[in-house]
Length: 379
Image (cartoon, rainbow, N blue to C red):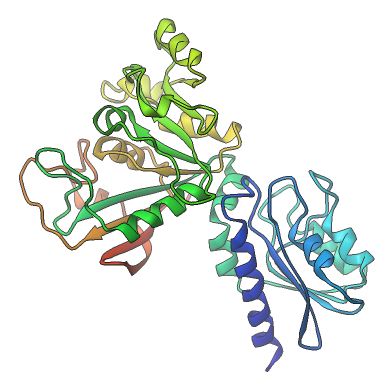
């Protein structure tokens, strides 16, 4: 097998290893690494937990024989700085690795390229960009967070074939099948937080937890401009098991704030900007862009938006959504008063529609999942 194909083959193994860290390493990237010599994999490793050993170190620990002159495949440029752990570049040099194949350069502008530079200066051959697109997609959450200091937002919705998220009576359980619902719990496990509007809490009284065995509960974010959330809501209980943040406006009534804080809930008072203050519709809502900035400060790198029609439109309108996931069930609901997944005032002209790029689709049980990315204007 030629070198390029071999590199892709081994890098794919490192990619699959990296996926094992989903839901455990946030806000760090997902990284996998393997050590190969003469067609034999001598060591495998992945980043297992935030603050613990990196993938490269775990691959070294896994190797049971001399690895002098071997090749290391790693999906992200090895770190060259001291953080929670010592720099991996030094370990690579110490272990006399002769070649390092890297999937993608570290997107952190403070360190990008520095690890590669150190490796080259020590005489190690470096190849960069093998399966780069796949590596970047796996770490799309980390890339947004480390470059913008804001969370990557996935808008998830489920609807019938005719675009309804509930019947005219408001019944919505369950539009999609069990396999699709399990996929959603995988997302809740992987992303740091889940966000809904207060109306969803009032109508459905959900727990917003992860049902997977050994899964991790996301931080629950409730957008509530007037703090009308009922104090007996399920999302306000058991803060030791799943934390809750209520995002409200800076003018929130202090008495209501104190009642929520007494339950162990974090209340974020989000400031407006001039555009919001001068808009009669927006100034009644929580500024979602400013909310994302605050969440970034709290090390929340990814948000699953499971909002209703109103919050979904606001999120799209304010440009905080990065990725769309739409589950379509083979059912027709009908009804002029049955809600669709996106409400709000809507757009007046098709040229102003929110455009979705890089669309993919697949069956999840009997339902269809369509994924894509919101088109961004070049800044």
